[in-house]
Image (cartoon, rainbow, N blue to C red; front, side, top):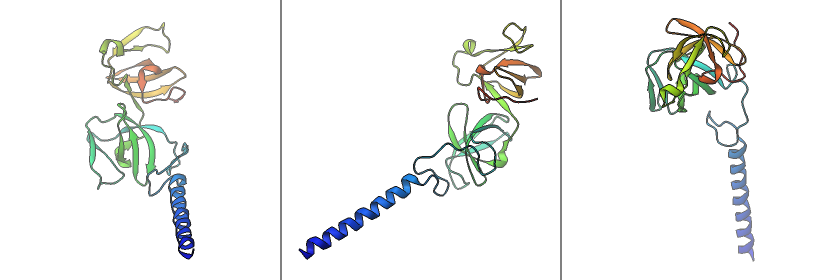
Length: 191
């Protein structure tokens, strides 16, 4: 009987420890900067800026790492200054970003710029289907000034409800938002 009682006490003690451990991991939204359970949508990061948000690459060569630190392996090397990326998490001086192709990793904050850029129909395999018209005004009826191929990075100057004023290769004009990755569908950007 005493052996049964000791077994029951040990079992209950072990069960309680296990439940508390699992509860800690399940309900702790951030453990040393890494997510371990359910995470609620974050509206502002440590910087006080909104998360998620779009930024661009500041340098010509930028390493994306698998974790927030130089000790982590490089997953991607970007060679395109101005490429738009989306910040989805902040940790110390590191930003977890998503690129136009959906790859995610960590970039040191000093390699990112608040300058807004967008990329035309990234990942579109059919170049003809992915072409965006650069128009003189924010209207489907406006004259087409140029045609922009998929993958071209543009500077975003302003955005209205459905159109963005952009510049690419010295040309400025309006492109429908639906063709751009680097601005949110409901985002308004003042000039």
